[in-house]
Image 1 (tube, rainbow, N blue to C red):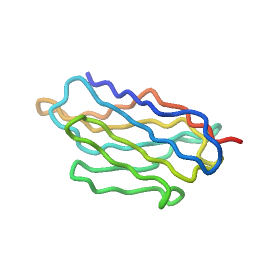
Image 2 (tube, helix red, strand yellow):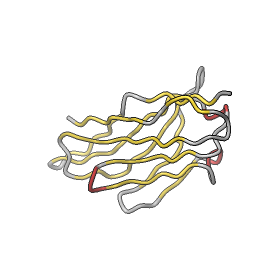
Image 3 (cartoon, helix red, strand yellow):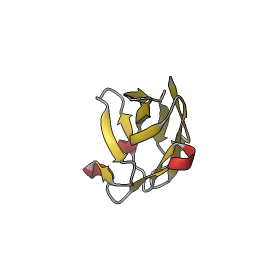
Length: 119
């Protein structure tokens, strides 16, 4: 099994910044794509940003220019740097990873971390 543990969420004022981290551990031979999703209150979960194993990234339009996804393959960790936060960014943020192990490839989710943007 693989565990994804997120950290870095919290309460921040509009215009502020937060950095989320997600560390993967367990039965891992290789991690393919990693991503951050979010689920605002009363809404469906949406993809925020994704990064391939060789560093290619993509973002949902609403966060382009404000959020940056990155990863440290040596640490099996993905990050999400969030700047210029606004109330619409309030959500539970989830880490997601495609993980390879002895010929298998499975998808895993973290438990989620709350981000609240409020004055």
